[in-house]
Amino acid sequence: MAQLFTPAASTAFRVLIVLALLGAVATGVMAYFWARADSTWNIGKPAEQPVPFRHDLHNGALGIDCRYCHSTVERAADAGMPSAQTCMSCHSQVWTGASVLEPVRSSFALGQPIEWTSVHRLPDYVYFNHAAHVTKGVACETCHGRVDQMPKTVKTQTLSMGWCLDCHRDPAAHLRPRQAVFSMGYEPHGNDLPEDVRVFYREASRRLTSCSTCHR
Ligand code: HEC
Ligand code: HEC
Ligand code: HEC
Ligand code: HEC
Ligand code: HEC
Image (cartoon, protein in one colour):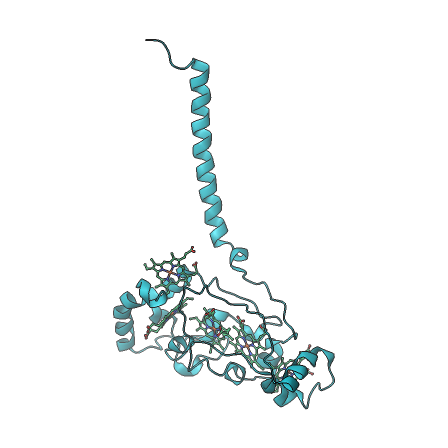
C-alpha cells in the first residue's frame, strides 16, 4: 500500500502533538498559579477613598469599637458603613479645619452618605450574611485580618468559594467565644468550645457545604 505521509511529515506531526500536549500542561499550570495568586483576588491592594480614613488610628490607637461605625454587623447581612454624622460626633470637635475632612463636612451638611469604595465585594450570585457568622463566634479578624494595624484598608483573604468551604467543612476549629469576636490578636487557649458545639458543627457541615446555602 502506498504511504500516506512521507517519513519527514510523520516526524513533524509527532513533534506537533508533543508540543500541543506540553502547551496544554503549561496552560493548566499557569491557570493553577493564577487562580491562587494574591493579586488575582486583589489581596493587599488598597482602594481609592474620598477621605484617608485610618483603622490603625481610630480602632488601633483610639480603641473605637467596630460596631460604633459598622453598626448592623450583628443584626444584618451587611456590616453597615458609617454616616458622616458618625464621623462628625468627634470631628465637629477634633481636626475641625482639616482639608482631608472636607468631604465628611459637606456630606454632613447635605445629609448625604459618604461614597466609600468597596474593598470586599462578592459577586451578586453569592449570598453572605454577617450576623449569621458574628453571632456564632466567627471573628472579624478571621475574615478581615488585623484591621487595627491597617493605615489603609485591604483584603487579607481571597473570599473565594474554596476559602468559604474550607471553613464550612469544619467551622468548630475557627470559632471563638462570643466576647472575643471583635478583638484583634486573640490567642485561643486550648479547648474553648464545649463538646456539644463540636458535635453540632460536625453535623451542620453537610448543610453548610450544600450549594443552596450560598447560591440561593
Ligand atoms: C471617637 C472619635 C472619632 C470618630 C468617631 C472619628 N474620628 Fe477621625 N480622628 C479622631 C481623632 C482623635 C483624630 C486625631 C488623632 C491625632 O491627631 O493623632 C482623628 C483623625 C482623623 C483623620 C486624620 C488622620 C491622619 O492623621 O491622617 C481623618 C482623615 C479622620 N480622623 C477621619 C475620620 C472619619 C472619616 C470618620 C468617620 C468614619 C472618623 N474620623 C471618626 C477621632 C474620631
Ligand atoms: C471610626 C469608624 C470606624 C471604626 C471604629 C471601624 N471602622 Fe471599618 N471602616 C470605616 C470606614 C470609614 C471604612 C471605609 C474606608 C476604608 O475602607 O478604609 C471602613 C471599612 C472597613 C472594611 C472594608 C469595607 C469594604 O468596603 O470592603 C472592613 C472590613 C472594616 N472596615 C472592618 C472593621 C473592623 C473589623 C473594625 C473593628 C476592629 C472596624 N472596621 C472599625 C470606619 C470604621
Ligand atoms: C465569615 C467571614 C466574615 C466575617 C466573620 C466578617 N466579615 Fe465582613 N465581610 C465578609 C465578606 C465576604 C464581605 C463582602 C460581602 C459582600 O460583598 O456581600 C464583607 C464585607 C464587610 C464590610 C463592607 C460592607 C458590607 O457589609 O458589605 C464591612 C464594613 C465589614 N465586612 C466589616 C466586618 C466587621 C466589623 C466584622 C466583625 C464584627 C466582620 N466584617 C466579620 C466576610 C466576613
Ligand atoms: C471561619 C469560618 C467561616 C468562613 C470563612 C465562612 N463561613 Fe459561613 N458560616 C460559618 C459558621 C460558623 C456559620 C453558622 C452556622 C450555623 O450555626 O448556622 C456560617 C453560616 C453561613 C451562612 C448561613 C447559613 C444558614 O442558612 O444558616 C451563609 C449563607 C454563609 N455562612 C456563607 C458564607 C460565605 C459565602 C463565605 C465566604 C465568602 C463564608 N460563609 C465563609 C463559618 C464560616
Ligand atoms: C460557603 C459558600 C458556598 C457554597 C456552599 C458554594 N459556593 Fe459556589 N461560590 C461561592 C463564592 C464566594 C463564589 C465566588 C468566588 C469564587 O468565584 O470563588 C462562588 C462561585 C461559584 C461559581 C462561579 C465560579 C467561577 O469561577 O466563576 C460556581 C459555578 C459555583 N460557585 C458553584 C457552586 C456549586 C455547584 C456548589 C455546590 C456544590 C457551590 N458553588 C457551593 C460560595 C459558595
